[in-house]
Image (cartoon, rainbow, N blue to C red; front, side, top):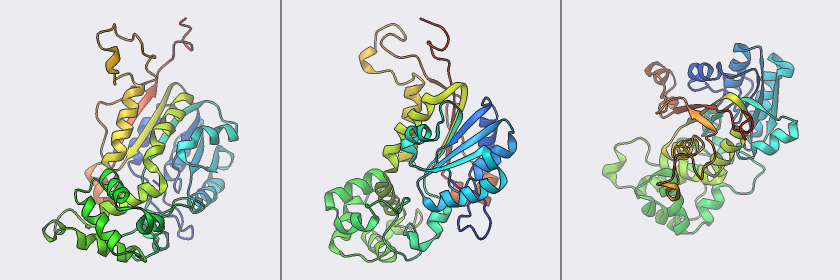
Amino acid sequence: MGAPLGPDSGFVHRPVMLAEVLECLSQAPAGIILDATLGGAGHAQALLRARADIAVVGLDQDENAVAAARALLGKTMGARATVAKARFGEASNALDALGVGELAGCLFDLGVSSPQLDTPARGFSYRQDGPLDMRMDSSQELSADRIVNGWPVEELTRIIRAYGDERFAKRIAEAIFACRPIEGTAELAEVVRAAIPAATRRTGGHPAKRTFQAIRIAVNEELVQIQPGLEQAIARLVPDGRGVVISYHSGEDRIVKTTLRQLAGLNDPARFQGLPQGVGQAAPAIELLEKRGRTPTEAEVRANPRSSSARLRAFKKLPQPELAGVV
């Protein structure tokens, strides 16, 4: 997520897989492109520069990102760019409030942005000490502190295992419980590190990475927004409209893949087995443009190591029976 902004913006970030995003959305019809996870507006600005026949509506729940994006796009793109503070899982409500109906394209760049990770006061980083916060939207009540110092061991274990793919989830959760109250991110990172067997700590990056990811996802309800956000955006796409989703870890990508396959008619419900093709099912809403997601080039990973886990999936909207005049 994010964008290359000026040094005074406080929100400086390199857009991931920019060339691939531009390639995919270059095939979208003229109209409005939804950037559902705007960040610092790097993708949005590049899209607007590449195509004079589109406008962009950008959504983000982080007020810092919204302010930075408004400053950048308002200065360079004027009326062709609209920015609103909203969760991407509530895209439909946000678009209705802006008076936006149909979309020519949509972009979802999931996960956390570099400015969030690199600002200790936001509490996202296990490498720098900061408060146990991790809220993308600072107005919400749930924070990392509430989870770390308040949730029961069983619930901590569940989220660390489910959202972090952490095999030592139970040990980590029990260690967190035993060390309460935990005061900050540095202390939490050390508690997690000590809970993991020494031999395991020597490989696979920072020992606290998966746990911090899991807590961040729980704080911001990131995974539960993916399916409704995609469904809402795709419902508004015009025929041949294009969509792009970039995910960064297996939990995100599983939901993205399952949702897109379902909307493409590729996840046939078991109850329809044995029936003629299409019986009992709605017509596919989209066509997947590739069987497998794309990954960044080696050159991009060298230039921006945080892009290494990215996976891009692209699709186009199919004409629906009622739109094609089929009764």
